[in-house]
Length: 262
Image 1 (cartoon, one colour):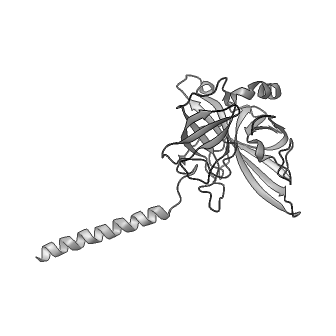
Image 2 (cartoon, rainbow, N blue to C red):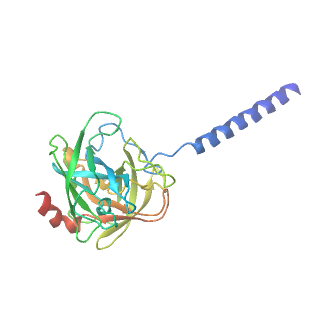
Image 3 (tube, rainbow, N blue to C red):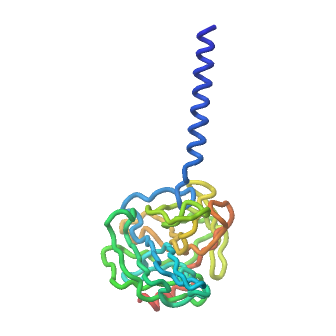
């Protein structure tokens, strides 16, 4: 009888500990991109963190912000057009902050690898929420992300990288590059709609992931042929979510892009 009671006590204690661990786990922040995962050091080196310091506000003050992006030419970074807006919220073809820097090829921002360069000029797509940011110094030791020449088919699984926050609640940019996979659900004239796919169905971008690259992956002998940029992050519901994410389509503005980056 005593052994039975001890067994019951052990089971009860084990259950309580397991429940406590589950509560503790649920209280921990999910990986960002929301419910995504950390990128191994050195993977996807074309990924970019844009840091804007000293953006003018309507009340005469200053604020800081950030976006994600990708290197598409030695001296050009692609990101969302709305990452460069004036005090009235209008997209402009210039850096709006006192200082805008692009950190390229640095998976962990607390490290020293990769490059940190100043953004000196901006070009806005006339049709899509996409901008090209020119950096002061060309980067020649990182292969730029290749541009798609056609839109991805519905059902295609693509990968997103970004330095966004963990959640839409009190968002703060992370210091470690994150990634997740989404699936194409529809293709429009200037946008592509995506929904979460992996690691979870609500793996989705968060604030400060704006401009992050969506790219396809394939096996290829040359690294520059493995990845192909199809879209950039534009906007969506509060993260994480299972709804549709709106992204800026790349292939239909490829001539405009090529006219700028050469």
